[in-house]
Structure formats: C-alpha cells, structure tokens
Amino acid sequence: MRAFNKLIIANFKQFIRDRTALFFTFAFPLLFMVIFGLAFSGEQDISYKIGLINNDDSPIGTSISESLRQIPVFEITEGGLDETLAELEDGDLRAVVLIPAGLEESLSSGQAADITVYYDPSQTTSSPIILSVLNQSINVINLQLTGQPVLLNLTQESIQAQQLRNIDYLVPGILAMSMLFLGMFGGVPMVEWREKQVLKRFGATPLRRSTMMFSQVAYRLILAVVQAIIIIAVAFFAFDVQIVGNWFVLLGLVLLGALTFVSIGYFAVSRAKTVEGAMPLINLVQFPMLFLSGIFFPVELFPDFMRPIVDAIPLTYLGDSFRQVMVDATPLHSLGFDVAILGVWLVVTMVLAIRFFRWE
Image (cartoon, rainbow, N blue to C red):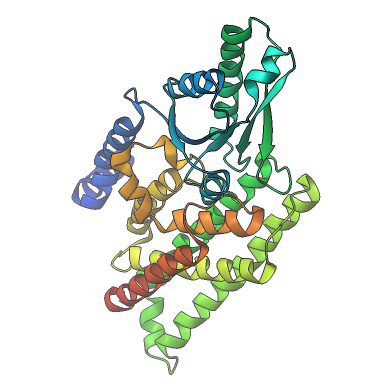
C-alpha cells in the first residue's frame, strides 16, 4: 500500500510539473466553454436574405410586397428574375419570391393565383424555415385580402436538378472529417518513434530522413483514398447516395485534403516530446475545426464576429469543395478559391513542419 501511495504522489508531481498537461486539463475546457458560450448563449437575431420580384403593380401586388417586407426574419432585395436566381445559385440569397402579374384580376374573379418561391434544397437548415415562414405569411395575407384561404397559393420551385436528402449533404461532411482525423493523427507515430529513440537509430543508418518522411506521407495518401472509397461505397449501397460530380476532381480533392491535414498534423506535433504531449496539441487544432467549419453546423448560425475564424479554417474549404463536387450544393466559395486556400495551408504548414520538426 505504501508503494501504491508513493506512485500516486509521484504521478501528481509529474502532472504538476507538466505545464502542457495542466493547461489542457484545466484551462482548455474553460477556454472551449467560453468560446461556445459567446457563440451560442445569447439571443441573436437570425435573418435570411431573399429576393423579391413583383410583376404586379396593382394595389394587391404592392400590399403583398409590403407585407413580405414586414417579416422580421427576411432581408428583402429586389431585382430581375434572372439576376436574383443567379444570386440564389451562388448562395448570396436563400430564396426568391415571384409575385406574378394579374393578381387583382384573378382574385376579383375568384380564381386562385400562384406566388412562386424558388429555393435551394441543399440549404438544409435555412430552406425549411424560409418555406414554412412564407407559407404561413401567404396564408395570413390571403385571409386579409380575400377572406378566403385558398385563392393565394405558394408554389415551390427547387433550383436543384434532383431532389436530395439530408444524408446526401451529410456524406461530404463525414468525408471531410475523415480527412481531418487521418491527417491530424498522422504525426503521432513519428512522435512515438522520437520518444522511443527509433528516429535516432534510423539516423545511424544509410536511410535518408526524406525517404522516411515521404513513405509516411504516401502511406497516409493511400489510406485516404481507401477511406474515401469505403465511405462513398457505404453511402451508395446502404443509403443510395449518388455522386453527381466528376470522380477525378473528387479524387484530387481527397488527395489535396489528405496532404493538407497531414502537413498540419506534422506541424502541430513538431515540437512535442511525448505522445501524451502531442494528443492535446492535436485536439487543440482539430476540435475548433470540427465545430466551426460548417460541416456539422451551418455557418449562418454563427455570429458575425466569429465568421473570420470560420473563414480561416481549412476544413471549411474542404467541406465546401466536397459538397460542390459530390452533391452540387450551393457553394460558400468557388471551387477554385477552395482549392487555392487549401493549397496555401498545405505549402505554409509543410514548410513550417520541415523547419521545426524535432528528430530527437
């Protein structure tokens, strides 16, 4: 029992002397709580930008237009149909409402009239909310104008060529997350070899360090491709998820994403002396990416002051590019821009990892 107590005391002494362990045991959870407390604790007004085309200049058309402007969750912008639909496809608008001409004549004669809303089903969070609000609003406007609940109808028009489900949009996020985990934990074996003096022994052999590093990177790339194939195969055969984009572009994005996060992973643990010290560093990098990149939570849910953080995270761009290629979702950025940002992260972190990596 005495020996057991001494071991307990020794463990506590070692823990107290390890500043990294102290930080990630006590300070890091508090820091994480503060970040998400600032992001989600307060009441914040969420609004959606929608386009409005009013082709009816009668008092009824004007009344409907003004009533839609009074809805608090909508920021209304007017323009032509082609212009606003292009903004909708680019992700600048969440919906487009078209008020047709001849409403007064149709309602006066007792005929039903259709108000069309164009929406993007890939906006899985905002689209259902917008459509629900518009349906309720049109019903209220209809009762105010006609006293009859069936004369004004809201017709929904999807801008997607095919109707996609939630699982179709979840798979790209899962694939992006797998690239993150694969890359971030890629540096752990190197830290373990460093801790056990394996790298030092390799240094006494004719084996070049560059050869060893390239073999590790190649190994990770092969794993990335195999991992992507498994995820896509399971999604296809188990859930009938269809990949609508180019397979070669998708393969290129998988390799680019794996390379980028392998480089980030090596840089994150470049100075870690032990595996125990490396794991908190990895978690420090990957947890904010998981929660702030938009692969799980839509970016419009974050307050404006956090958007620069979201825009700085490489996983944001990998997830966005995967969604564009795999399900033709509305982009946050152009595909070329996503690739460019990932390329910058790859080059910068690779240079830093080579510069600061400890071999002994």
